[in-house]
Length: 497
Image (cartoon, rainbow, N blue to C red; front, side):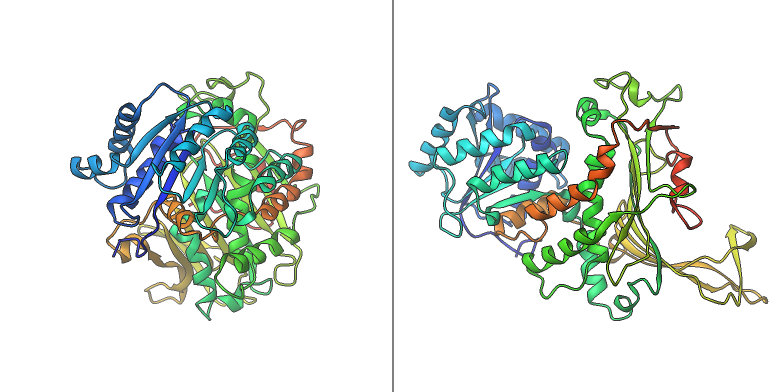
């Protein structure tokens, strides 16, 4: 049995459009190599790199071997590397040229490649329509629910706003059935993200308190310490933190931690419950003292370039590198509970987490202390907080109050924690390994449905409408963003731990 506990027995061809790009080298090929090495996919598989650069099969294999030595999560040995590379081939052609797709179809027709096919569109959004049209016209897309099967994986961003997302969905759905489309969000492949559902719905002690009666607020943070490394300046200048992180990653995390119990664990049931949350989700009303939106942009400090000084970024760019939102969910379970979202570049710490902060007891019977080493002082009441840490050090942590060993009856905050590294010695699968395996299995649970995509963009439509005129607040690199972001909260402040 594979370390992944499942094995794909069907022969399959994995076609990567845009195969010479950064994503293929850093994520896709290393993920496929690990699946192969762990025995999760059959020996009867092929990986076809499809791009316009001047490579032949040998040159492409050499390029991918170098990528594996640099980026593979599992050790690369020459025997397994040689075996894996024997499954690789290269199909040279312009992704917008119909003739290139006709040549690819010929390889399927003469049984050079396994008939089941998964097309991974690792390409820019403006090329998707042409690519899907050419796949259809070349006869490379089979009928839904048929053998051999066809599946198409689409990378984010899924549009830039509601209108472009709707246009992209129209293109995809004009040639493919929804069951054949896999919109990938790598955050949903992380172990702790999937553990949110099992933690909530498999434990009687927690699910009854996930509601407005007991929860004071929810904070979702995705903070990065990096800036525009790897030549991302041009892309990010046109995208920004809101489009890059909030309208997909953070909204998906929000849905999982607030959705109602599904009637089953199949894709349809879970997606339907997420859609109910998105329909009820809205930007909170802003007041004079409590705004609902804060955009920031990192400045420079002598050692670190300001965003506007980064390579391929406009000198007068107004693109936000930090975004914080105060949201509300207008349903029976969560009415009145603020949900705070925060993401940014060049922040103080790399962390992604969901913090569910519970209400403080109605009567404070105890004195609370906060201690650093042997130095303790009286502190305010610390609420219980349940933390789902996505990265780094994936795990689930519960902060509670317990009596401090002393002659006085005082309490302090302590952690009850579950970490994957502390429980299991084996390394967790990479998100792309899990998601590619699910796509090969035909399991779309962790992929985003077309109506989800459109609902996410609809939620932030008003924010996007005013974004172009909003001047982002400059914040120091290595900080937690603009001080103005603290004004969004009704509580003591953001969790900066």
